Length: 638
Image 1: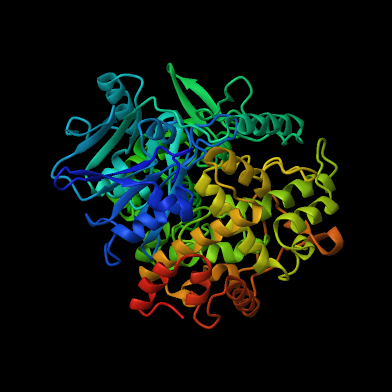
Image 2: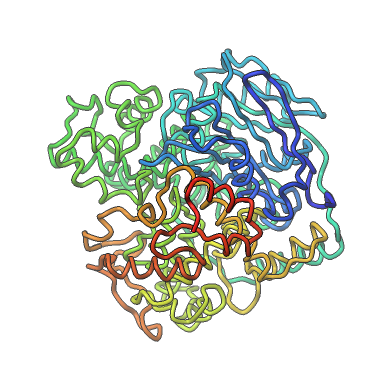
């Protein structure tokens, strides 16, 4: 295989004996592209099925994709993967990060990095100039993520890019994050994998930029991409843009930009983006009767300790409700619950969780587990606030956006990049129905999106279950391909979602892949590669005990509790039949129809309908016969 687009090697580090080995990228690239594909296959090959999240045999796997390092394609994303304890079922999980670390790892000569084993004492890894060093990190243990990055840059120079953890991961908080330069944060419980290995940080440096097979064609595609971005519909102003306080900040070599923001505090730059600002936004607004800087302070606290804001947000909502109900008190928790929204509360909460002090030790296990241990009313209401057993926030609710029901049920964590696809068009359409300035997405436009991306116009009727199984499959397959190239979800294809051209579509993505690697891959072949990668991950989690059909489930609240208000859509209005407005207020996901939808989905995937297990015939068609043999050996194949 030519190394066009790839660095050519994947670095493997064993913290037990300090050894390093190099895996040829060519062994993985043809079938699995990069990113999520590489990570799932490497995990299958290296990690024993019985290994738990905090066992030395588990791996932290960091991977970029063939598009990484090339400017003007929003391709600086990278993945951190491994088995995590974030959910009620331990499973292979993932975090999708931006910034510069993924590109810098590639510039250092590696398409990925695999860390296995556990060190006797805190260490960090330094990768530079063909050298890999495991160094003592005792002086860094106990420091915040910000302090660690500053210390290592002072020690190694500003040209290094640093991936690190805060105190939450050191103390094995199940929803601890990774943190890297430029505010990049990796969720899904991946931070605690590093903490369990006594691995404080990974610093990388290098200047070996990748080479494209067809640089002239890639330049033309870059020009086309910029033209599309500049001519695309503008996105409505979002709440994390704070005039006079924040400004645009693109990830390393992105070339396109998005609504990502940053701001300066005491001479240092911090991120301000999307869900992270919602961690404490509404509690602070309610407490102060308007905007307050504590909203930004809360984001910084989560990043310095390494706490997942998508878990912290609903946890705070749950604590507030329990306090209002009188079922949790300040005496019981040791938290200033009467001051939710204040700096005192968020500072106390984040510190106690990160250090596992008092009631924080309970919360460090995730909101749902904490509620179960408390019992009573707190347990009865906890699912009103969370999306899944990993206690992540409930934003694009499947009771409103039926496209998301199967996606949530078949994923080990909240797959936000997939959830966007059904929800964002509906929300943009809603603005059009309300006559908002700049709104552009008509009912006809949503229908065209459904035909182009989801397999048929019927998927544009959000009031019907019809067509949603196929839409879910198409969304997953395409997203898995994009998360293997890797291309950023902010531009591929969700925002701003033009309809008349291929911006963000699989055709353009496949052309970029071909220009970078020299391998011809058309739109349908790219989507099939995504299907192969999705099936690879499915095999991994089945081998870990996912449970097939029985494991593909939603929280009971989605079936039993009628929805009254949705994120950004309080009246739950969606495109209905023929594009007419329809309300999902008061709706649930009917159990019998959900099971019917699962059966349709399994049929479309070529899996066994009764069990939800994969079949040898389909895996063979996807060039995964070796994986089929591994599943058959464990009785997990039909």
